[in-house]
Length: 413
Ligand code: BGC
Image (cartoon, rainbow, N blue to C red):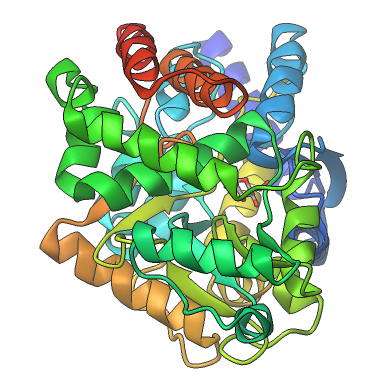
């Protein structure tokens, strides 16, 4: 009895000290480009406004491969950050390690279940409990266009892959680079994903790259997707190896190149450079993909802390989903708010289109998870698929051999 009273007294003392405690929020992310850093700075401001200290844990490297390696080391050494940018099926993988904190209290108090689209809320839960908070919705199947380059080259903005080949050839004949690309595995995979979707459509994409159905992968459609990727590859410049994605975006911004295939974080770079959507640059769905939407939802998993400071973690999660943060963060980041029914009136035309297409493709069946951005496959499969695509891009591998390798990669599930 005595013991019970003591532990109750201790528990309330702890509760008191935690609620009056200004915590430290350490967040691992890979937002280091101009537009990304501006967006991350908004999160820092908000956390500081709540009285907490912000400890930045940025690991450079688009697509997050480097960040994931660093995160594993930190967690294994028993010293996890407050939160880390982890998305898609990897949330489940981390959940099964037993190292995550539980956000159910804040989720219940703030009605996340009705605030978030079910397709998003489910991914944030491990065994029915919230262990992650979503930040935004990015669309990956975009093509960024510099209209001046097209004008100079007398080229038409393409809506099919055949038209793309024609336009790219004209841009090159006029002495400019057709596609700005960075030869890094995740960027190669980003391009391949849009090509496969454009060539095969959302149903094929789902079967082949989400369900990993061997019949769908071993098909003339996948051969055609690789043939098309070969054609696209031909229009990339010789300096592409290792180039960061934001430097490729810069080439489109300054008129050195005509197009880039990249998710709408590229728009963050256009905005940071003061460029206006619809005038200085165009955002169009990659050829053949206008009825589809490859979604990429950034989210943060939260870790159980040694000092049991759940309040700081809850404050962080609540800040991420707050209306004001969603508005300003997403305008800088190029994405759209993840909260349902957010007022889009202050967003640019690309974001308005993205928000509308997210809803319409969800109804009509064209909404698919981005495999290049860790939304569709377990990490082992994702890495193996990425390797095949990069090998294909950097060798003379035949489409048939690439399909065989893809089947082997999918079997890693
Ligand atoms: C992330 C984006 C990020 C991009 C480039 C994507 O995987 O979802 O938030 O801007 O990589 O680093």
